[in-house]
Length: 228
Image 1 (tube, rainbow, N blue to C red):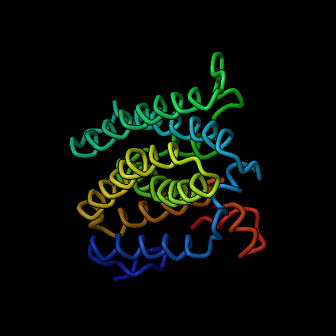
Image 2: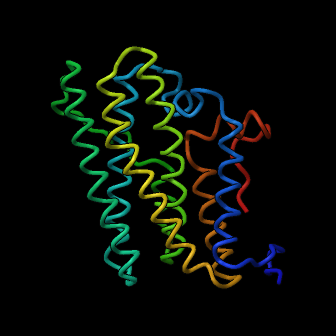
Image 3: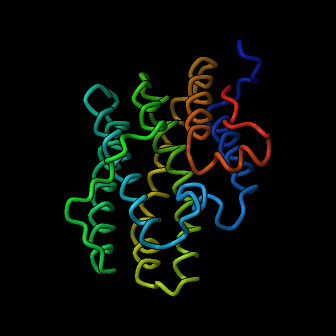
């Protein structure tokens, strides 16, 4: 069967597996530190990268909280509630690490420059499957790649404490969020219409992610990954 957009309709697990392969193929084109360099605008140092991580963690917690009240499905609600709690805990752990590194964090506002384009896009999503696809599934896939690169970077500059914080706590939990999102999509992606919504939400989320803009320009010459 083929959907109205011309995509072949697969069973739910095969469909999600195909999306995962697409994401991995995209990330495979990235260089050693490209997600970090894109996110930090070239400021490759532990402190500014941790401050940027505060923004990412806070936005991830807030979007999950924003979606919670009108998410009826209990499994999806549980995924979002767990993510909200974990991201806020990550925020506080990163804040503590910055203070250990000698940073004065009093008065620091990670959202001083406003919310990211990705956050604004995520707020527009209405269906539960779109939200899980764009948030826990796609955004946490980006976080998984970014965190792995950050751990390697921390070790390259001999900051073992920060590397261990990510390796032992933050990284495994964000991998867990991605897997929970994937498992949920494998249950609900049962019709051509739902699959199309999931595909568009995941791809759009990846397209807007700041970390991937450098890859987009390098591989396509465009300033945004084309949405589909």
